[in-house]
Length: 298
Length: 250
Image 1 (tube, rainbow over the protein chains, first blue to last red):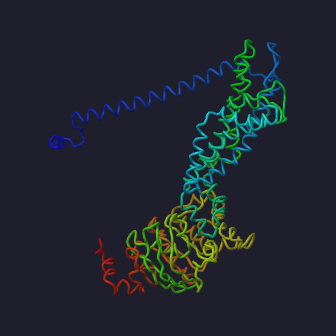
Image 2 (cartoon, each protein chain N blue to C red):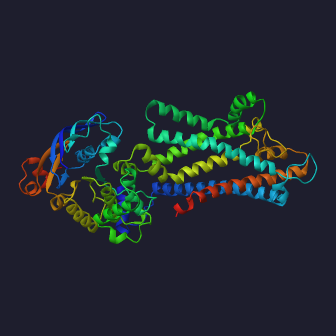
Image 3 (cartoon, rainbow over the protein chains, first blue to last red):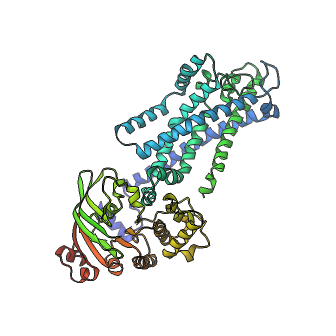
């Protein structure tokens, strides 16, 4: 084969030789490009269709009452989802209160101090936690909070969601903390800083964007959780800011209304879906803005 | 400050990186450490401020006495050693999301050396010592990552000077710099010896010849030769040294 190449290169060294190998190479190149484009197009189409569908079905029913009123009794027109929105905000806030610090410090442990069999065990457990169906966390909160309390409660819901957040925050922060170059840690240590000071003042700030991304992802994820709330927060048709009492949440309300026989409630379920998506978007933007994330990303 | 190294042995896990190193560094002088890659020269300087311990699995035996005090004594904590020894690394490592000013101020702040006006003074003096002040005095609040490579390295030198050390360790400080920045840093090294004991690891023998009073040669974890730089390069005592500086080594 080498003789063929030489013969051709004598004429024009940049002319690709007409060998079977070269044809195969070209073909596989085209096939791979084609399939990656196809897969991307498919994925984007599904997502766009979903968004447009929710937008089209929900947007006409977005009105002031949706944000100010509570649901009406079955079938009656009007009313809104104000209590569900309030409940979702409280639940996600509560979950973040538990989930973010626990997850972040687990991530710090894993990346900075975690060596040997214990850390391997913790890492494995955290990975398993990420994969567990979320309804199990609901069950956990049900057993340990709802049953002793003899009542469904927002607290139980918040705890369930918080536990779901822990592994997500822990793993993403571990990953990004590990990416912080060794040179930065050394810079700080060489100045006489202690290990904890180095982590707090140098390593975490350097990994800040990644950590925030992990936190936002985790919040978005739990904001849409329904299953664990079924047996913890349970839902409520009224305004409630008492976390010891049952509490409504947007996904719960959507779940209930989507199955309703009344068209008005189905429409509100769509409107609620749209509100949920927009709320998640707004929260993540707000967090990025408040922590200066946009400035860094130039 | 004088540095006296006695019977220093260093391991990474089970593999030994340094064998029985005995060495004395004179105060207020520049010493260059040369040798091929992997000869242990970086490991050696990192033992002088106990940074070596930050590598997992690393261990040290022997003594390093700074002004007579063994820094490996049981009662001594590494961070207190490092507070008195400045270190400059191969790749400039300014803290990326802090301003130029904060990068220099962080050392004195961590160590509680100064605050307020006194801190301002330290920062300004350090930047002047590092020959960077005139270039950046109007942009102290800008991010340090905006600086050029050479400026970043001088910023790192200023940061090391700001903790008011007596000894400065430099681990191949110019290997990532262009010739002009290299020249600036070398000039700086020569000036620093009036107030500091400077130890520079370098790949570049010409650099050793230009800046150092004494030159030390390491090979395969062993100290081969230490001599006055002039003598080291003109009349080396050991055959290995001669082979290395004349490029006959493989």
